[in-house]
Image (cartoon, rainbow, N blue to C red; front, side, top):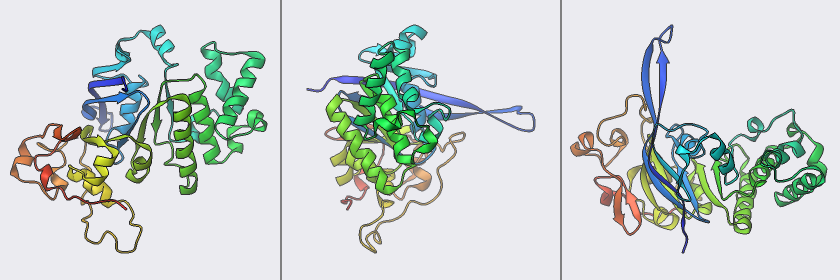
Length: 330
């Protein structure tokens, strides 16, 4: 039986937005709103949604790269949000992150050996010849060569730079890795290679992933369970198989409609999501999805649905989830 590695309870984060010529007008943007979920040891939880829904903010809150306003983040029973600076530094070994843009997350003035070796030095895990050998070993694990040790990031392709970022995250042998859209900046042919690499490393090192993405077709192949976010909230949570065979939230259905069909005309009978994501500064009342929802009724305008179990281990936040169309994604 898998044990819970990470338990997130009522996590919230708002940002203050200033406007006006002198920034005198303040408004609050609720990026993450009362988020709760559990991540089991060795599993991959996909976190999906359109840009601006709070996915990346959630990942940063879990690792305390941003400070939460409310909630708890329990890592093996310890509340990450209550740790002091020294305790948090020790916990960094257990929780790492792979960033979306490797060109921005790798120091252009450091050689690859320094970039990958830095976490080992910081945590006192290796130095000298041992450090160099460990970096060689990590380069090999991610499909790079020893000769890359003394090169700079700009000398690599996008896929190779992401492999360097993966090696850096793997260096301290963490238990949890937050993958923040790790393939979205890569060509399609390279995406599959990086996803396969992440799966191989997960099996070898018993890693747990929170895999953040906006593309459901990528998440389908890597995730054990999938959580769908909309305007800072999880609106559906289920196993990957359940979610793709029978979505229970209209937003999930709309995201699936947006997946390109394998055959011409394959989506003609599927409605495409209309409208834009509402502003998180002034979200709609009731269900936040109702302005774009084909199933919405008057109740949806005033009453926000809770995330509840619709079927065994299949949660959705929708008053009329039974109306959502059932289909298989090619």
